[in-house]
Length: 221
Length: 242
Ligand SMILES: Nc1ncnc2c1ncn2[C@@H]1O[C@H](COP(=O)(O)OP(=O)(O)OP(=O)(O)O)[C@@H](O)[C@H]1O
Ligand SMILES: [Mg+2]
Image (tube, rainbow over all chains, first blue to last red; front, top):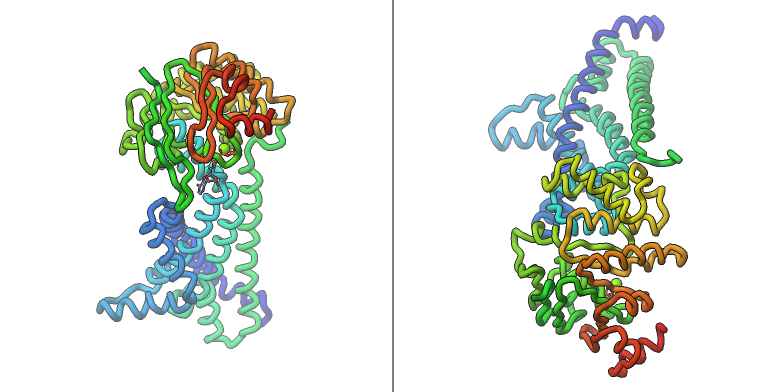
């Protein structure tokens, strides 16, 4: 049996695994985006307590391995609360919290990269803080943040493979299950790797295009 | 009645006492120029007037409203206090027209059409009508600063604050900005201008204020401050800059 017949034979399962990988990535990134925005804004707040809250969150995320976070949320918390959590749900929670922490740092960095004069000019016109942040600071910050944001998307996509350890049948777990049947480690991991690679390449191509489109007014003259 | 009344204003950054006891009253339509050495607290004083810095103590009244106790009203008060910065601080992601019309629309003071009409009028006033649809980075420094003045005027302020509006400009562009400011003064705008342009102060100011080490050391009409300064520190400063 060569590698092509293997691909054909396991295609439906591989595609299902890849589908779950992509779904988890998208949902996690949406939730992480919300978390990242909220905690990023907290971390540039004037109030010390708000900044402290953001700092604690980011430090916890960065200070512990993703794998430990996944175990804690899938095994630890349900044990303490006497409940059961679906692996996919646990996985999404883990990745959202994890990516949210990194995105918060990206948002903070983006906002801090904009000169203080921008906020002052907006406030001096009478704009409230929130409006100034939303209409003046964030649109500029997002431009500088874009490469880091895209990078985080790719990292989160790859991190979904760690969810195989809590038996989420995403692409990596699918590969493991297939190998458990046919012992064709080399071919199956090669196929799985190529599938990740192709998706990530497509993603980078799209993001490069977005990045290019986001420069405003530049070199129009 | 004073447009701006500053009483016993003090401002410290940590242990550094920058403004020690400032008392100043600015009348309607008056043009005040503030001069003084670098680090003497000129910007800090100006920024206390629109609460970009919080006063440590004392009061700053603009149009009868105490800025230092504005609580929820600060955004309302600031609408009537225009500010022009040394670094222009135009919004780079907005066209010139949008820079000027954005705040009045966002604050629901004007419809988009009204605000754009006003913006075009203001652009005509600063002689940049043809630049309405370009982005700030395509303008020279002098042009950017004129747009920044137009942006502040779009809020129809009662007072305009200028913090060294020409210090970041190439020498050949200083004139065009000063001319716009002169015209503004002629039109009766109440202005407080921090400047190193002694020529401008001499020509346009009704009163010149010399600040040193957190105090107003000397004030008076330009003819007096420049022609016959009394305080030794004023004399020393003027000897250095003139
Ligand atoms: N946010 C701040 N935190 C700490 N110190 C500050 C802050 N802003 C200003 N200072 C200090 O306060 C003093 C006065 O500063 P200010 O900017 O008011 O001076 P200035 O008269 O405008 O000087 P320049 O002519 O250089 O603009 C300086 O010693 C400055 O370092
Ligand atoms: Mg200054």
